[in-house]
Each structure stands twice: as C-alpha cells, then as structure tokens.
Image (cartoon, rainbow, N blue to C red):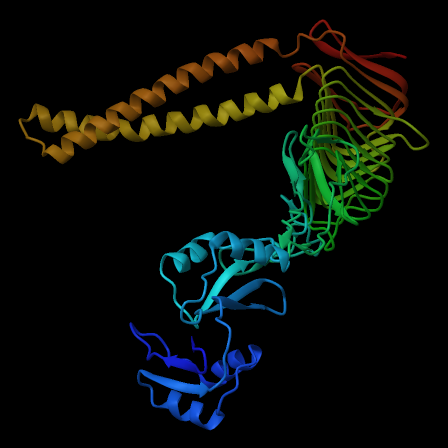
Length: 521
C-alpha cells in the first residue's frame, strides 16, 4: 500500500516462484481492518487481472502502515499460524524479538518454531501461512499386562495321534512345572507422557490400568517383583487371576474326565481309578475308593483305601510301600513292604515284608514274594487254588536273574547262527575262492558281531553266578501263619521249598539245614 498526502494506492504484485495469488476477500479484510476506503468492484477487477498494477483506492490522507501479521490458533490449540502482511511504502518492519514478545503476550508459549521464524526474517514472504508454534500431543501409555508361561485354558482336549485318531486317555489337563520354572511375568504399565498445547496447557494421557502378580504358596517372587517362579516340582493353576502351585494333585476320579495322570509330585484320588487308565507320580499315590484294572506307579507309597480289583491286568509299582484293603487278580511290586487284608489270585513282590492281617487276612492263589517275611492269617485254599509264598530272596534280584538268563540265551543264539556262515567262508578261502569286497566286509561284520556276543555271554554269566550265590543267604526269612495253612500251598525260602501236605494251624516256616521246616509260632 502506498500512502500519499492526498491519495492512497494499492500496489498489486503477481505471484512468483510458484506462489499463489492473493485473494480479493483477504485484501478487502485487510483494508477494512485499517479503515481504508476503497471501491470493491474496482478492487475485484484489478486483482482478477493477475498482473502488476497500481490501483487508486481513495483520495484520502492515510497514515503509513507498519509490517504486521494475522494470528490463527487451531481449535484444539495445537498449532499457531500467522500470515505476514507487508508495510506500506516507507512503513516500519517488525523485528524478530518484537514478534516473539508479541506471541508470548498473546499466550503462545510452547512449541515455538524458531527455524520457520528465522526463515521468514531472512527472506520475507507475505500472504503465506507460516506455522510459528506446534503443540506436543500426549503419548498415551499402555495398560499393565501379565504373560503366563503355562496353559490357562482349563478345558480338556484329547491328544491327537500321528494316525489322526484321538487318544482320550491323555487329555492335557495338568500344567506340570519344575522347581525354578518361571510361571508368569509382569509387564508394568506405561504411564505415557504429558503433552502441551501452544498455549502451554498440559494434555494428560489416558489413564492406564495397573496390575500386580498374585500368587499362593510354593511360589517365589523375583527381586524386581516382575516374575514368579515355582519353588517345587508340581502343577500350576490360575484361579481368579491368582497363580497356585501344588506338589499334590487332587482329583475326584481317574476316568474319561481326567485321562491318564503323570505327575511330578503326589496324587490324591478321592474316588476311584477306572480300568485301563494309569496314574504315574514321583511322590505318593492315595486312592480313597477302588482301583480297577489300572496301572499305578509311585516314587513313594501307594495307598488304596478300598482295595484293588486288577481284572487280570491291573498293576501297582511303588518305590516305597503298598497298602491296600484287598488285592484281587492284580500284580503288585514294592521296594518296601506290602500290607493288605486279603490277597486273591495276585502276584505280589515286596523288598521287605508282606503282611496280610485283619478280619479275613488270607492269601489265596497266585504268588507272594518278600525278602524278609510273609505274615498271614489264612494261607492257601480248601479248594486247592495254587498258592506260592516265597521269602529269603530279593524279588528284584530274582527277576534280574531271569532277565539275564534270557539275554544270555539270545546272545548265544546269535553266536550259534553266525558260526555256520563263518565256517563256510573259511572253506571257500581254503579252496582258493576269492571273495568280493562286499562279501569280505560282510564277513568282518559277522566276526565282530560274534566276538561282541561271546563277550556278552561271558560277562552276563559272571553277573548271574554272583547273583545266584547271594540267593538263600537270608537265614532269618520266615513265613508266619496265625490261622490255617491249607494243603497244596508251596513254601519257598531261599533256594529251598516244600509243599504243605496237610492242614496246619498257628505255625511258622523257616529254613534250616538246607530244608524248609514248620515250627510252632
């Protein structure tokens, strides 16, 4: 704008370097804000020509205008934009310090864009939007969360076999854990960061949820309180966001609802163990009901409150003791003692003793073996059921001897089968017949196999003889009958045995003079 003594002009300059032409409305707004009279129609016409020209606005005397600007703050107060307007001819320019001070006076305090402002003062460009302040939006945080390193899905799912069939005996319902296993990790909440508007107003991030690790006994919390680990071997469960570890697994029944159980600690079954299922525990196994034709193996004791009907296929194995109200058509092996009220048609082995007492207290049919003693009220049967009682021999030792005998027989069979081939080859070589490289290699492998098997026979024979020498060395072994022993019952003590030919009462069987003899209790 050119302000003369008796006239006011508007200098119209077309855009350069890709700039945009100024709009007529913006020029009219500028002139009105400074009380400059003009002909709007003439102004529209001149601007729309888009060429350099000098337009007479009025014949008034007007004060010279300083360089100035228009400030616009976005509705969310996150951005401040100004448009500079040139001074009239001979008017004063705004300084940088003056602009910064003026912005502060108008409340623009945060996010001043010094680089953009400096760029304008190095090269003034008018009627263009210049961002002079930018706010900082808040950085929203994240809720705390916990990652569990075990399955939190309690629904039982059967195992899928390789052939595509489904194994309903393995339902994957137990989350096993070992001592030292990390069970869960807490990822703390991220509070985020406070933002600022260009007016300096704080912008809070959204609220986040906090969490902490909840757990019961047998669990240790790390020093930084971010992880929990198991203190014992057992199983882990999640109940209402709280982690529990127990070294005793408690189930109502072992059936289709649980599948087979294999557990690091002890197992308590309040009900029954159904046929064809198995329970394997490194601790004890306690069953409040009946065990049917199932397989139970414990690293400790096996206790069955109501007894076991093995159905000819049930089996008990305990590294400790076995206690059952009754055992029928079952196999039981304990490294400790076996205690029951009755044993019927079963195979029972004990590393210490077998005690069958109580109201009935009978052993009828089957085979009962113990290292030290067997104590029973009624032994054998009036019906002549084959009953064998054996003491004075470690059952596991005897089983190992039988196993070695089978291994020796198998190794000897291999040696015997190789001998004809080796003999035939020697005959060929004696006749000058040459063997192919493959035949030579094959014969070398047969010779090596024969030597290995011969050595195996020698070593196992020595081992077996040493075990056999230890049989029968336990002179204190005895069979105690507090009631009746029926004819046909076989008593074995060490490597000696006898068959009872007549009914006897209140007697004790011992080994003396290399024979089994009966004495009074």
